[in-house]
Length: 60
Image 1 (spheres, rainbow, N blue to C red):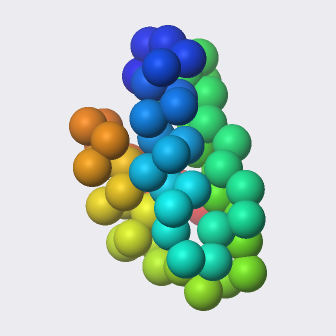
Image 2 (tube, rainbow, N blue to C red):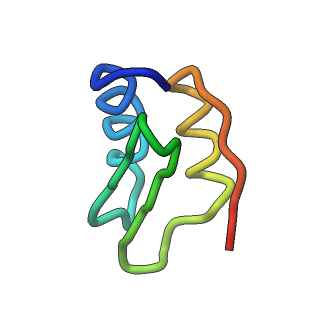
């Protein structure tokens, strides 16, 4: 990711997942933080990031 449009693309894809309450994404750091009610799966988040045209790995 290199810009605000990149952030928006990821935010929109991940934000549509069931159970996601907030999406914080930074092109500068390359970090995506997702919070919600716990009903979403990490694999769903990784797939949504992929749908936006990027690659994600789970850390922590």
